[in-house]
Length: 530
Image 1 (cartoon, helix red, strand yellow):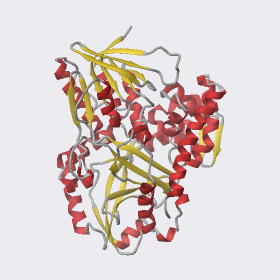
Image 2 (cartoon, helix red, strand yellow):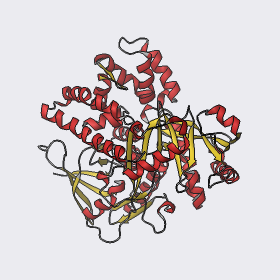
Image 3 (cartoon, one colour):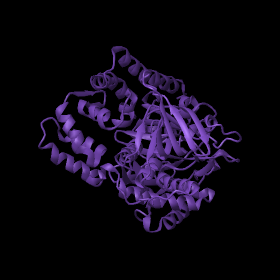
């Protein structure tokens, strides 16, 4: 017999979890159904920026930039442990396509659009001042730089905490449940999902007044499953990043590619730098998206061209990552296609196309307003602008780390190093994780991967993790170094076994899934030219 809900949300990325949280906060009975893990698609393969989008000014997307800057301020307030200010340098080089005065003018406009939400005034630096901040920046042709504040984020955990808060508000979350049937009728929708992990589990049947299709790159597939005919809603594009040894001290960089004039980022990630992103048409299945040799060569070539003194080898590329942007369908050059969201209403099926990660909360609010109006249903007003996410109670990352270190003094198995790491990850949820770390203190510390068994147990018991990649990539944050991931895969899988009752064959299958992914990455990296 089907369970009845006010709203079914298909998709557990940032748009889907944002919609589910908003709907639950308004008092609706909500089910969220995700084919894989929370944040397992594009939502954990971003540039990890919460920003207005400086480059969108060139395409006159002023409304999108203004909203993004306002939403940045909201996220800094409601999720200070997961979103934090980061200093950005925009170097000016004499040979670049965008002259210094042009960039400076854009930054002044950016400041004006931010209004009361700006994080600080933009400053102009000489070449000497720029090199004092980042001595390893390429010196040849450097004329100076602009200094501004943007915001970084932990994209996977921001997505996860939206799901956890939705669940705390009464939403039911079903991960690893691909939808296999979706029917629409005059009185509502019916969908059937199948557990992709437990083949013996009965199908999940759900009836709802409406369905929000928040599956990102899979949106057109879901529309076809629902019987929608006609033009596609999306124009998918592939965006790739690479991870290399750290190129800066603490500043992020916004640079212009020599090859084609595209803007790209160099972003600090501890001992690594995240470099990206590319943009190219993508016509394959979203789950098959991996970086190409061209993607790696393009990004690594831009790094090598600037940091000649580093003598970097492509073998030092630690990861090559790619995701599919679910851009709303539009003509013209791909780079000019707007990131603005669009909502398609098709007989109780509401499909979100496009949208920026930074704006997910506003997109969810607009979506719910439209759905409720179409159904003629009343509900409480949106409250996500004010409600903190679950881990926000400890304040900023630095404050959360300080509280974790203080708590670690009372604990037997937790030192300052791990307290810092866990405080930054969990924020105000650190206490619950610390209890399990004390109960399960076994440690894996090899090849740059430091993992406590208690972290893994917490992910399984309290964070909806069901597969090995759920834990490695999106709960523990080991996505940046494939060597660390390889070394951690077996011990983490064995720890999960004790709590999920995996067979020996299942452990082998989970580890092999990780190995196949990393092997495919290595083939791409090793095949790209130096």
